[in-house]
Image 1 (spheres, helix red, strand yellow):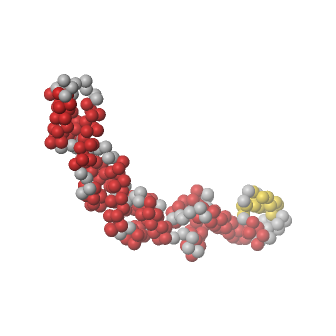
Image 2 (cartoon, one colour):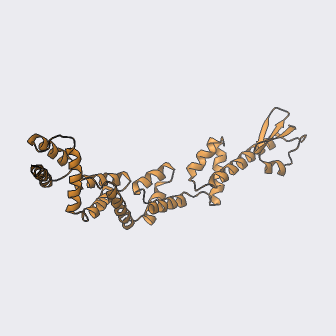
Image 3 (cartoon, one colour):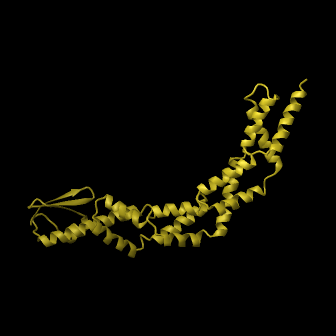
Length: 267
């Protein structure tokens, strides 16, 4: 088959043959094989050029994709397939990327775990879910977590996160606050046992003054919904709502007594 024309097509060259076949190739293949107008090549050479072209183009795509950040093998494979690189060529490209250490799921997992430990946004279970979706094997994930997120570091992070959440939900009752924080910690990917460690660290720091201030804030908010707060029926409603929010009956009784005294002092 004879080359009829060579046209520039964005990042590649389009070689047109007299049998109506076309071949998109990279510049390095064009130059190394001296593919000029009028040159004749065999069918076998055409097949070899097609294979070489796909691999070369796929490598360029992969290098560009990897230049932005670390990627897993699955991410690179999906990216190349989305750019219509055939499976057999993707495997060849990935083999080369592994040799060059441009793709390494073990390194990716370790890097991701270290980043999440530093940012303290995710617990081990969330990290594991993320890495699994990226195609990292269970073995690499467990190794990365074992090396970079041991139990003592998990305890340190979960306590920091619990303290941060406590400030965010400081208006809640102690009971409601601890329940909320325990739920958030497990949602963040910490185990129930580790979440309990975070909650326990807060519980030891809590004091009655903070609980009383929280009770007054929420109690006064509820009271504003009623025109008269000293009647038995209304006080029962207030008591029920405050109890549902986790305050003790003794503390609620003290609060209601202050309301009664305030009402008596008006007269």
